[in-house]
Image 1 (cartoon, one colour):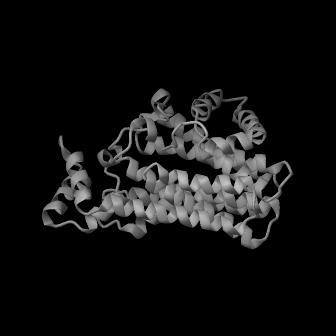
Image 2 (cartoon, rainbow, N blue to C red; image 1 turned 90 degrees about the horizontal axis):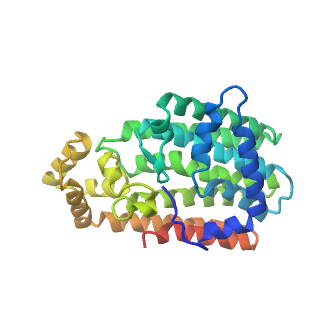
Image 3 (cartoon, helix red, strand yellow; image 1 turned 180 degrees about the horizontal axis):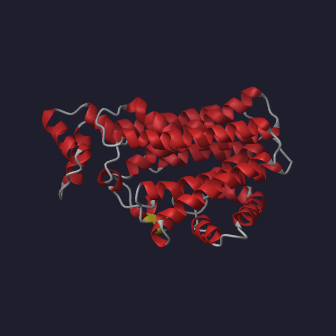
Amino acid sequence: MGLDDATQKPHDRLGEWLAEDMAAVNALIRERMASEHAPRIPEVTAHLVEAGGKRLRPMLTLAAARLCGYDGPYHVHLAATVEFIHTATLLHDDVVDESKQRRGRPTANLLWDNKSSVLVGDYLFARSFQLMTETNNMRVLSILSNASAVIAEGEVLQLTAAQDLRTDEAIYLKVVRGKTAALFSAATEVGGVIAGVSEDQIRALYDYGDALGIAFQIADDLLDYGGTAAVIGKNTGDDFRERKLTLPLIKAIAKADAEERAFWVRTIEKGKQVEGDLEMAGQIMARHGAMEAARVDALAWSEKARNALNKLPAHPLRDMLSDLADYVVARIA
């Protein structure tokens, strides 16, 4: 899941603007990854944290705080907290999904083992809670702890919804709000809270993060059926092979005739896939305009994210966040 590496994309411009803050975040992350008694912890976390991810979520926290005029030290703690929560969920996800690759490198569970990935993920969650308490802000603690619970809930919901052809768009949205959008919206919301801005502006930051996260995930789902490994950080068709009911698939299943439904039952519910099934899935989705319909949805969420920013003060960072909302869906335009 990722944005491509071309220079001067919105996240690159954000990175340049926030370079000093991000350096402080990275230093804090390295400091808190350390473990005097369990060297396995920094080994595993360094493998993932240093793997070249975009640090998009912590940048959202820094950008929101700076956009709102914050000049204290705690946006750095919150950004590191957000990255630790994200990294913990990735470690756990790779175990659940039995993944072998993450950001173009072998996953931690492949290099070490599942036990290490789960336990180090637990350690990072604990570290994230230590970091957020250092802000002495109960509302921030409430937002980030609630987001952590929603993320876990979304992952469990995805387990029960996976391979179940009754999964509809409402359930899909709940899963996406859990596993992706919850951390985006918490990342932006806490930036406004720590800066002490109005409730209207805090709500606008939440709405921006929520809509951005949903647009981001739908775009990711679409790329799985038409992107390249270099762009999406995984192999095209992985979602189909893993029998994940993503939005394009859900839209196609909703319009399926008896023959198509039998195909979905065989490939998704029963997991009996043969050569040529991925191409057939693509043809069925094209027949019903499922990809285009999902693309329209992603664009609508992107627009909602941009509109939310209108309640925030004019600032170069606001423009970059608006461009970012455009960019996450430009990959599928």
